[in-house]
Length: 194
Image (cartoon, rainbow, N blue to C red; front, side, top):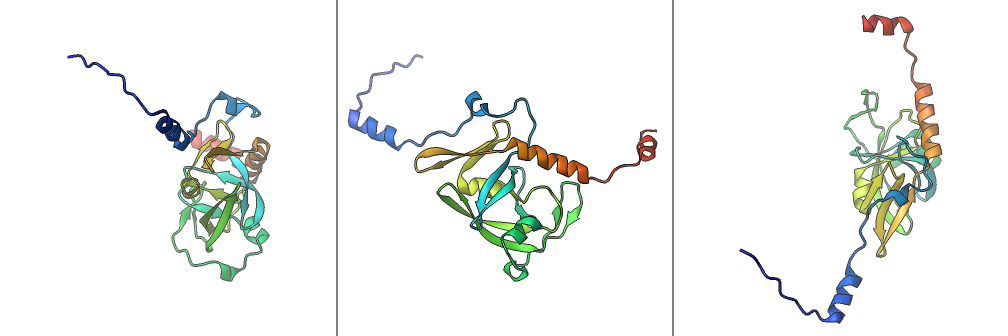
């Protein structure tokens, strides 16, 4: 059975109004890779305005369920222990170790003109990043991130805006993390392979 499609007349004013109301689509193309070093496997590390301060070395991790801040940021924002509220749930670090958070604090993250309120968990552990922003921040901002393109894109005022990653800083953070790892004895490696 075939279906015939009949031409439909559309009032031109309605069509223009509908087009004007359509939201832009967030997407990535090869043009978004211009200015990046390719190929790469760098993490997405950005600068954000957190708690009224410009904060460097912020890791965007869409695989993480919580926003985390480390001692450098905590001290840099001049926060006091009484600024933290209790947070009892332990976290598992990148190394698989259980970490007990020092507490939780709600802070504002400003991206362009958009401000999102986020709960950060304060962890007294070493990572080369000052903070990690995760799915909660991305979802609140209605953003999409791409490590390949080294960008976070989000809608604001009817336009697609961008936060651009810094590959040099991402690579410095990686080197710092690797250099702080405890070295493994060569005899231990040989014994494990036997």
